Length: 388
Image (tube, one colour):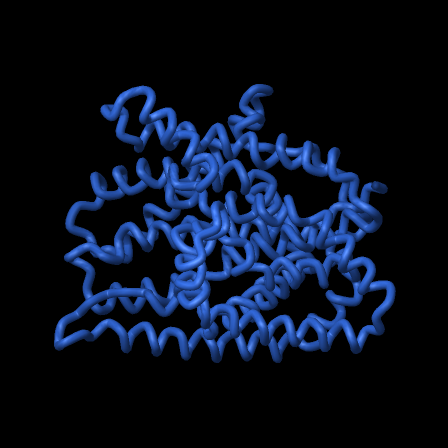
């Protein structure tokens, strides 16, 4: 595989997505506290809507980078070995750490050991590790998907590819409507591994997120053309993103009143449902436009910041659930009685800083790199902002 020039904007997108993940989890910690008021719920809803692109963006990046880098037949052995070193090994170590820190050690060594192993396969050691389990499925399937898409790319005309993608988008929207029905079906016809994947662990089933991976594939296979088309129609995508954001905010605020009582909830933002699927596809395009704009600006400080965040995003992501525990503890100690919106923002800033610092320090230590999976950086293209 010939090495491609690094796409600097990808690091910006990783930085965006990492910060968005931390913000979501900080909101999740404070939004449901009894002292949260209507105005807190509304402000946190706006922040949550702005941050919901995180998981789809990470999936989009995975698809884009894989299809950009692998333009010929994939050697399964070397490909999977690299992912084991860069993705699975850090995940496994952190999974054990979370199991030991948050698990029930009083249950005995044998029972706890079995639970640790189970958590490795399910991502249940901590609330954020489900994403890694889901992404591993995409890595395992990539050689097969790449071979099929390369064949279609070479044989089909552009209009046929566009029509096929639109049909896949429509099919995905229908799929998100039938998650419960599919789960009920698999419960009736129990199949080992598959039934749990469509029932208890449906939230980490890669099938329910495939459209974002294919969006990345479409971008990565013809990057320059994709960038030009997105920029040419950027105001359309930004406008639609803002309209859907407004509708989503309206729906969320409407759900707060139940039987005359204030109940702050954000069920309308759950990822796998038709409206959210459209919103998230638009958000991926909107954030991509933002990353391109950042790459074209003469703002070296911002570019360096998000490049740094992007470089350490995986290690920081793995560490951030533990760092959020420290961040919320410090916030609650320093700001007792303050409103939950302020505390959410402060905890978000602290957690982001602690997580990135942890990943950076581990990357400096040769053994620590096994916990963050940092790969050697390739030199960027001569004009990195033109590469995406």
